[in-house]
Length: 176
Ligand SMILES: [Zn+2]
Image 1 (cartoon, protein in one colour):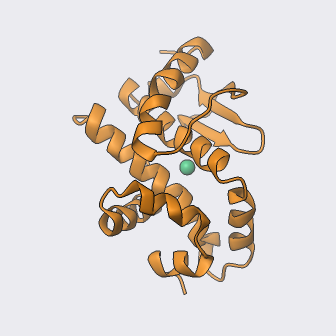
Image 2: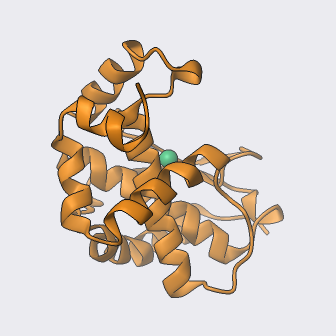
Image 3: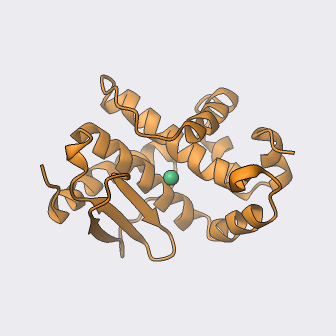
C-alpha cells in the first residue's frame, strides 16, 4: 500500500493532540511541511531546521498502520521539543561537538531521542498495545528506559531536563 500526502496529513493531525497530552509539550502544526520520500529505512523523520516531516510512501510495505502512527508520535514529539525549547538544536550541536563518547553519543541527543521514544512507547501502550513490531533503534530504547525508570511518568520533571545543565544530563545518562 502506498501512503498519500493526504493520508499522512490526516494521520499527523490525528496523532498530534495525543502527543500534546502525553508529553505536556505544545505540538503546533502551523507551518509544518510534509514531504513524501521513498525511504525504505525510516517511516518518518523530522527536521527542526526546515520544519519538515518526511514520510515514506512505501513504508507500509514493511510496517503496519499502527507502526506508522507510532513513528509519527516519535517525530511529532521532536516537533514539540524543538518548538518549545528554542535553544535545543544549539545545545545538541554543542554537546555533540564536545562529546568524548563514541558515535557522537551525547546527553542532549540521549534526552531528545530517549524522550521521543518514551512518548512513542507510551502511545503504543495506550493506543496500539497489541502491536509487536520493533521500530526503534536499540540505543534509543535504552535511553527511554533510563527516563522511564527514573521519572516514572512525571512529565514536569522530564520537561525540565530540556533546560537543565549538560552536567546533570551526563549523570542521568551515565556519560562521563
Ligand atoms: Zn528521533
